[in-house]
Image (cartoon, rainbow, N blue to C red):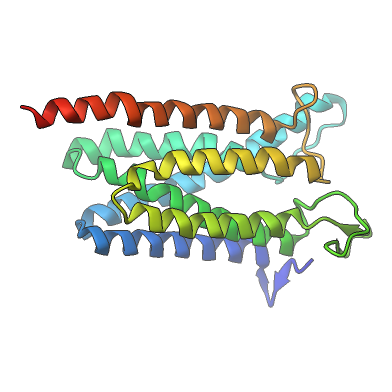
Length: 253
């Protein structure tokens, strides 16, 4: 659509903008909760390193999907898939936290991380999807509806799934930030897991850019959406049952 803004790559600019907003969200949370600035800065550095590792995972996973679908015609590409980035990025972040930050500074921010990180992921995703729109990728199926947008690559009017997801994620990110500042902030992570997995599973039916299929009838993203939803159920059960019981036992000591 608009792959360049001046001399700059538009997708890269949107990714950078998304990271800036994520850092702004962290700062809002830090000030509200009066958290240690140095510790938050270390966590932010860990997050940026994890984002880079996630980028590598996003590219590797998409190439894996392409190879599985048709090994004979496979060629390396720099196309990306969000879930590949998540699968690489989240473990990297947790490893950095538990092996370095927690070991050196203790578990002082452990509860907070699971509260404010979901809003940061969502807002960064949202701007990333705007980047997808500007780059002309992640578009929907062809349509004659008024909602259709014509991309300059000759495919005709398509459903702007990239813009729709961008709007959804920005609203979700702001909502999660507001939730994180309340006494129910601990539910930020399951809300993100449920909301995005359901949204992504549904929007995949309207996507027009084929990204492979390694399970019959499901796109790779739909498969990982199911996994994400199940993880959300598990974490919510942990919050409502196990953690609540442990907290009650501690309060009676």
